[in-house]
Image 1: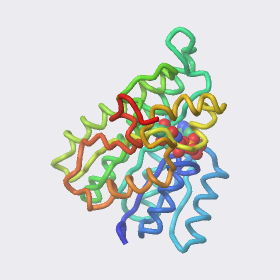
Image 2 (image 1 turned 180 degrees about the vertical axis):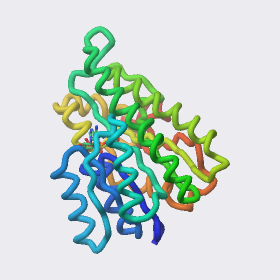
Image 3 (image 1 turned 90 degrees about the vertical axis):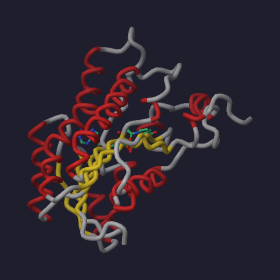
Length: 257
Ligand code: NAD
């Protein structure tokens, strides 16, 4: 097993990428701290892990709140004695996030508070815990939109993910000598709730698919496999990376018909 004796905390583990990663990590031997604001969904992830013979605990935490982030890290150490892997994954894509002229200030603030400040707060409380464990791995979920712009804008979301990417590089450099690795994961467009509620017509979905060389949306489990690599000791010399898992979207200028 690739994560034996490790303790992993995953935010947004009630759905999509977070849930797939939580169940995969547990299968690979990790004890998992499942964090979400959706209690029913988070508890369901724990039940799935336990039904498969794994160990997990649920914590309600809103990652935009410092006290909640302190609590989730504390729970990891109190429940399992240490924290080795921190997956700052939770994020939102607001339905009214559009261009600079039309996006409300409140939508901008909410998006930044969860997507960007939430990663900062996860690290603020998570880094000391990883240090106490003798080192570890942090994976921050950015996005392919941190690297390329789109004519169908989500201005706040895109800016927040750019922030996650640059913050990750700096964290990696600061903590490199402490045996704490920090990498940014950049998923391409996925067939999860987050994107499909935004691409809610066939026309919108096709408009996006045109730009993906592989000609399909990714699956959350394909992202989870990349997170597993970054979390495990197999990636021991990888830090500060911009890890693309995007079906080739950022490599493309013109895609095949
Ligand atoms: P999802 O909506 O399926 O799951 C996100 C989870 O985060 C939900 O369970 C939600 O309840 C939880 N959450 C939301 N706000 C929270 C908060 N304040 N505190 C704690 N938990 C909170 O999304 P997903 O598709 O699995 O996306 C996960 C991450 O991947 C996000 O950061 C997203 O921006 C990023 N991403 C997704 C795609 C995609 O196409 N789906 C592409 C690139 C990046």
